[in-house]
Image (cartoon, rainbow, N blue to C red; front, side, top):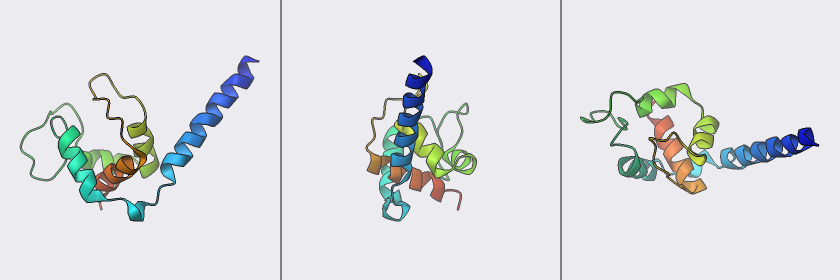
Length: 107
């Protein structure tokens, strides 16, 4: 029985990832993603070229965008974070906007 329940939990996670990743990137608003990043992320991360202040212990958005694909970023933003990260509680649209902004930094 335990194996069966684990299978359902895994299926649920896979469906969640699919729902998050199926947003249309063409409709994502990277300008809104930039605004979200300024509000929630700029205190620790370098979110834009030329930013003068941030922590040197966390990766820049350009580094993050170069390391991870859209699905991985969306999954991370939709899940609980490291204890030093704020609880963002972003909507799917906000996640898509933020992912579009991050990925746009490396194109």
